[in-house]
Length: 115
Image (tube, rainbow, N blue to C red):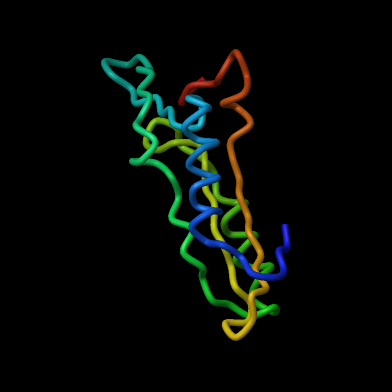
């Protein structure tokens, strides 16, 4: 999503934290313990992505978003959420944000590693 105008970065960070706080599935990982997945719900403050703006150019922006959105999730190690805020012109207030989650966390039948 492209945002223009004055961006309140603290409000954006707080909004993402609020969503993650309300949805345990976004804060959950499943480490394998004795060959079985164990559900671990982490505290919000431990998993909220850092939305400090990353300065980039318009030309580099698609690559940054592609890397963020294209990386897989390993829910045995980390939560299924990644987000970033990219600023294409440090002199302006124009920003692009990208957030990606694993669709498997919404499924009532998640697939475990090796299945």
